[in-house]
Length: 96
Image 1 (cartoon, rainbow, N blue to C red):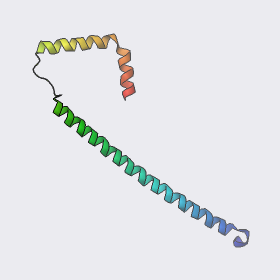
Image 2: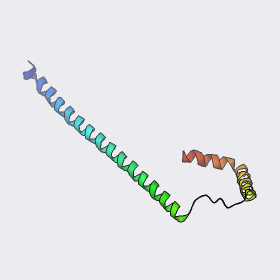
Image 3: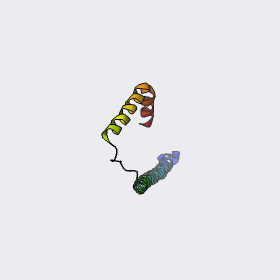
Image 4: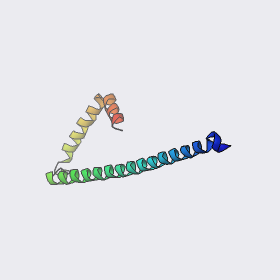
């Protein structure tokens, strides 16, 4: 009775379509995983190159400043932060 009404063939076609869709889904997942891995590797390489460039350019902490110079710099930074607290918070939230 199932053969005459086409139910068996309908089930077979649905099964084949499901199998094809499942294979495509698995392939997409594999491609996505490898793309994410490659992106992480590229980001790591960029960070390493930036660090090397910073080291070559000499952008390291300068310890030759006196304590009074550092304190005056700190005070100016604190004054700037007190003047514009809302803008700074908004920028920090956007960065996160």
